[in-house]
Image (cartoon, rainbow, N blue to C red; front, side):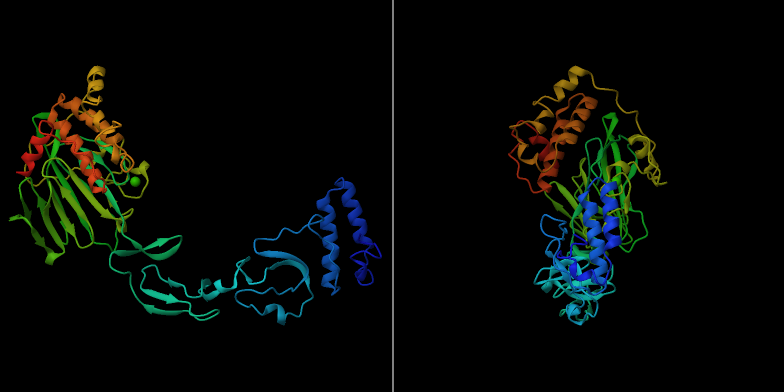
Amino acid sequence: MITDPSGPFQNCHSVVDPQSYFEDCQYDLCELHLSSEALCQNLQAYADMCQAAGVQLTPWRNATFCPLACPANSHYEPCAAACPATCVDPMAPYNCSRPCVEACVCDSGYLLYNKQCVPSQQCGCWHNGQHYPVGSEFWTDNTCSSKCTCPARGGKVQCSSASCPAGQFCGVQNGKPECLDHSYGICHVHGDPHYNTFDKVTHNFMGNCTYTLAKVCSNTSVPYFNVEAKNEHRGNPRVSYVREVVVDVYGERITILKQERSRVNGVFRTLPVSAAGGAITVSSSGRYVVLQTDFSLQVSYDADHSVEVKVPTSYFNLTCGMCGNFNNWREDDYMMPNGQQAADSNALGESWQVPSDDSDPSCGVPPPPGPCPEDEKKLYESEQFCGMLTARPGFFESCHAVINPQSYFETCSYDLCAMGGVQEVLCGALEAYADACQAAGVTLLPWRNATFCREYLCRTES
Ligand SMILES: [Ca+2]
């Protein structure tokens, strides 16, 4: 083909001597046992030399012979402009003085951008080495304070100062700053007590002192907060329950108590309470007393055993405490104040104990209960007890797809075993799951009735 006087390369023979290319090709094919790839490479080598010398060749490739694989929205041309049309310079081929080359050329209506052929209407502006489509709006800083637009193709970006709308925060998504909707991490402490962290790890820890649930641990521009829970024994010294919840925020110390009141900086006040010029509110909501701040921190306490700490995603990877570091990674949820991982939940709990200012001689950590005898465990896991949580059909079935009941089921049977199957404990365990479901927007079947778990509800509501 290379030397064929009537072949596709005939115009080139007088300009570039084909003989050495012919010999190289012959040698390669012999060595490589007639590899078609080697043949194509040799033909291309000669074609390139010819085109570089300004010779116009007739097409020598086709769909089956040495096809050139072209990326999406482009096609092969034997003699294409050496300066392709790009988003930045769509007229480049018309001002190109170099000889043509064989190449993949963007289809009509497409232009080359970042080595890809994109629809020409997507070509936009360049700013700090980044390309932005026409009409796009984008932030050029990581604090979302300067908003820019690309007004026209090849235009200059126009920027003005702006900020994220209320209810959104400035975050980074796919490497670009964007205003994102707030979503939340939820840490739930319930039972005697069990700590379900932001990253969905459960710690069983029965210490009855005061412990840090969650606080801000990094130097950051988001407001500081600190949430602590004080636990107490109720009858059985092996388990404990939350007695009061303390929240430090905006320089105020607010204690959510078991009664319908709160303590603000040591002074008792009846609900609803407003503090820090209205930036903090504490009010009743159903069984819960709820503290809210203007930056969407929410701490709910049912004045019995259940605490929920809800933190906006702007605190991602900024918290520490029993609730963990909120980085969406379960494996590092044993982090102690010194940054090291604790050996187990007991060591973790002790590390987060808050030195108490009032003398609390009973404060301590009981040894964890021994393993549950098999027959008792079986009973507590039946549908008369904790099995109610996982039963299908069952009262809680509609919630299974939203919140996995498994950890609630396990803590339920753990608690019943530790407390000898007391119905109040069972009701508390079912309540904890029901509350989590309702907080997630699930409507449950009525699971309480006149003889089952009703009295405990009335006790806390009356
Ligand atoms: Ca984590």
